[in-house]
Length: 216
Image (cartoon, rainbow, N blue to C red; front, side, top):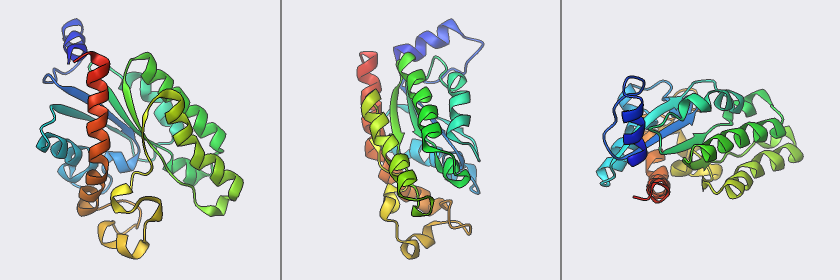
């Protein structure tokens, strides 16, 4: 991408030299980072391989941090969006749920991330999430709605759930068990493979959006 080449030329010593193509940063938590897995089995490496197998010229940057909340993502998005980054996957909110953080706070953090991406002219795939019912209907409605609403507001691509490849919001625990680690939360290598297959078409669309924005 011309954006990537310009960034490398202007900042030769500051940034790694990526091959020409689309560079995608995956901003997320332990699901993105690859918790409990060998590096090659994680979400980012498996997704990069899947995309390249489809003929995409793409490099993925693993910007996942285990335990991160939307606030953590907002605090580090500026240095995640280095000049070579053309697009970004944003998959955050699970740890907000674990802590019972008010959805209005998470919404403001996600909006900050999307504003930073817009300012950097970076295409975004925003990954949604659904709250459990134990926080009450008002909490669930506000939490579930913020993802599609923000995607529409900022012109981001949208995916309903990180786990779409395993059934998404309607995930059957019994059917999902063979694809999860012992904690019942994080996918194992086979689970990641299915998750990547669910992500793939949307990330190919993200690559196209980045190319259009770049004029390629």
